[in-house]
Image (cartoon, rainbow, N blue to C red):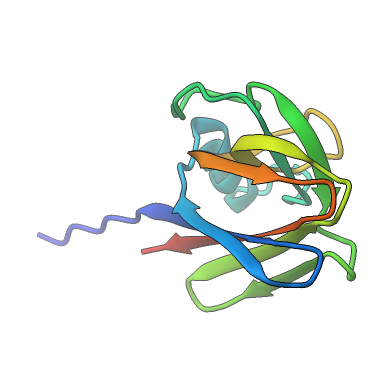
Length: 150
């Protein structure tokens, strides 16, 4: 008997830098949510949905759960399509997106992040809750989100 199991897993890395480019903090975390899994499978059968195009950060510390469809308290969202902020790479079994929240964008005590297919609202693919990252007005935050199919 042949058994095939496909699992989707993610890894998110956060890197906070000060205005001089010095790394102040790094964190790792992730959860693929139900709407993200539905998005993957619907595209496989040709259902037209927008591709994942934005990342957001927020201040809502509610634990990540698979049924969530939005961040609890969104603070800022940036577009993945911007070449100055984002690089997206597809490998044989993974998709990686990188977004930078520049100085002045998404400042505060951040504890959640998500990846979405729209500039506002939209389908949330993944959400993560992490130890507080205190992003000052002059700090930049780079998020690298890798989704692997294994």
